[in-house]
Length: 378
Image (tube, rainbow, N blue to C red):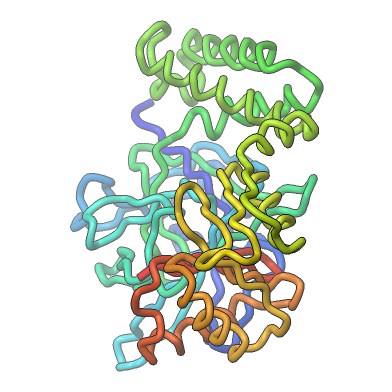
């Protein structure tokens, strides 16, 4: 059957002026996939459709159409929104955005390689079907509400491991991740149904063995031999996923383990302790330095970090808090959730501060908005 590419992605493409268009509350279907005869929404792509593709090993190759073999729907808990600028050839430009999982790779011209969405940086140039490039101008993260998940759309493409999405036809790739597309969802369902990690792992192992034993299975050509190092790696990944899912469901024990990573050096403000609890929930090691300590409020994974909680969701409020935080630490967190801060307002403030030269010396800004979060780095 040849190589298979499991193209797992939930992308939403919007052409809009970034300064006036606020990001969506939740990701929606509607991403435009380049198909034979035009474009099609990703949720409408079906087995047998022909999508525009390109040889993954040759960035200069002419795009060709390759057939979709099958489609899937998955339910991730976190999505990354990549906003990029496209030149229109007439001296102007427009901005679009794509939303997908953090693992979904985009071809980056400067790297000459595919880079996962979660590792993209502002200034990276994405490859387009016509040979031009689009510049990344913003990256944001959306987390599903507690107990909820997003809906993503997947499909398998024959031969080439790439395809093009969005009005600008951005080149994306997926490596046919067997764990992410098949085994992890299976483990997830088992854990949700009350199975232990060992029971879920055994279920995944038996399913993997069934795929290996069935030459007619669509994934047969891309799975490792039983007992091989790659086979063992898949089982290790499955074990890690099962244990993490099990711990996440058993909240009390999981929090008890995470709280072991918290140290409070001196009396602290209640909001600092509350935020430290959030960081611990996310797996960070946190030292709370106390309300009278000079410098940053926290040491997070060994990095001195200042927290600023916004009382107003304006551009000026963001800029002022960045300026104050800079005097305390080179890493900072701007929390605008309670104030109702939007991504657009925060990014506008950061852009203004950057143009004014006020961000020199800052190594990282993590911004928490009413709908998600994003990072700025120089």
